[in-house]
Length: 539
Image (tube, rainbow, N blue to C red; front, side, top):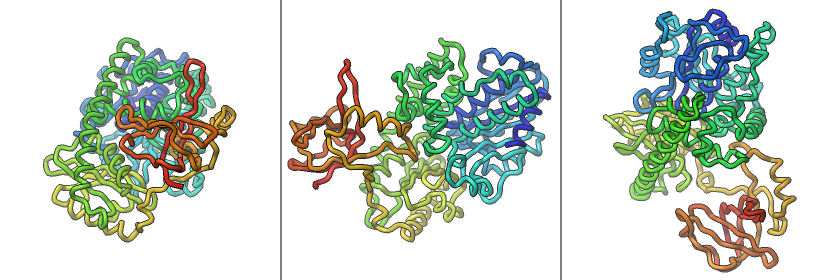
């Protein structure tokens, strides 16, 4: 970090051109927006979206610029790819004829594995700083600074997860904080005038959307960021919250299912630069246009996703022998690579097996992988490396590229690995219950205590409770897109319940146990308890 701070401050002092090269997902976009705003506050002119005035005391110079680049998912793939870098250097030109190539490129949410690409940039005289949280390979790129808390030496000291679990937007926030501290030590006016708390809204969005654990520092950053979101001073973010119909009290659910998907939709079915432009936008009219644009993209993404999920589920049921295959590898010509990750998650949810969804185009397959506890998908892909053109990711999620003729061999190899490492018990979905309660326990005091455990999300899931020996009261009914609404009673208390996505499910006619996440709803001054059902069983 210290080396990265030295280089960035030198770039500011020497009025250099900086390009922030981000990934196209919500973590990469929020990281890019945060760093762009901080560097603009430090006096760098932004070549792109018109930002509000820099901080007082930040002497903006003609040659000092900060520019943004995001790769195109379909054409250039993930991260610091050769194609992405080529277009970045070709299109990111200064608006004043000061110099050609940038002096410094800051890669956010990518770059840890880009050994050859970074070496090529360095040979061209472009210094590179990497801010990333992906798993490091054995060979690390030789750049000015690689700030990644999963590097082995640091990771060993951070096994508690406070730092090693940071999303890239959290690491970007750490860099901004370090820059500010060093700037204050040097008596720089912009560092004293900068309030980094204003950017915790972006940190919360990127952290929750990237599904990193909401523990340690992530929990602190997210909780504080959630409190700031409803009163965010970012015009574009407020326009996005308006179009997503967010309430006054924002939770990780609203980021995960409303804000995040809209930011991600641009990169999935179009150009992620629209999402970044929105997060930097200061013009209300243009912000409203961009928010609607992202909302429309999200609707299109949902339509494509639903069709592909139906096709993938049908393929799995018709072509996969679930008695023998422990990893589902499904591939089809024309599947949209922008949504294969979502489809993989949906298929895994249905069959509870590690899942690889591959979209094929021009003889090449691009795949997205999702896994279950006990099976490291990135470890399995490492064993299959000779079959792959490229891969990367985490234990539970990864991406790959593979030639179409090698897909059958990949399917066979992954299943051989799973046969060695997974037994029948590993393939049984389990619902972990935190506590057993009575329906009468679910009063206002219960919900006051429960709220102290928030924010809930990855690594800190909402507690699940069980109530025993309830019966149906009345007749269940199906509502919306296959959701089951019903009432249960234990003989003393009657409570409403909803089981999302199981409209065709038949509930027991006699007594049964229910596992649920409780929710307190308020309507016109009246509070009602609802059980968000996760599973039922006979006693």
